[in-house]
Image (cartoon, rainbow, N blue to C red):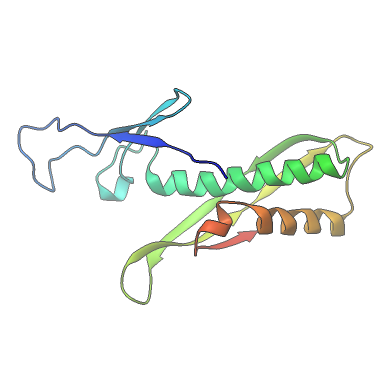
Length: 147
């Protein structure tokens, strides 16, 4: 199989270190050289202008579904012109009281070349198969729904 790496770096920027004062901003560095500024979710003291782990989780599921869907479309000769997904995730408490991303809803909107659009049934089949094959969806216990 393959291995994937990321480095998370954080440095204290406050004079003191209490729950109310420590900074949440940190950097994600990826093996290909990309870096991204990240933070805690706004409800947990993070900067709303930066990405938080919960958003990254939702984006990861959305991206994996899209990439798998595009591969399936290419395999079946359906020419995709554009793909947009306004995905959302709901953080909640599990029965044991721990917080978890309980549900992610994917809302893909796909535009095909005019002569290559699948039927409604085939589209549903492609999304179902993409969900079944998505590496990230197969790695989590979160309920993932495609609308």
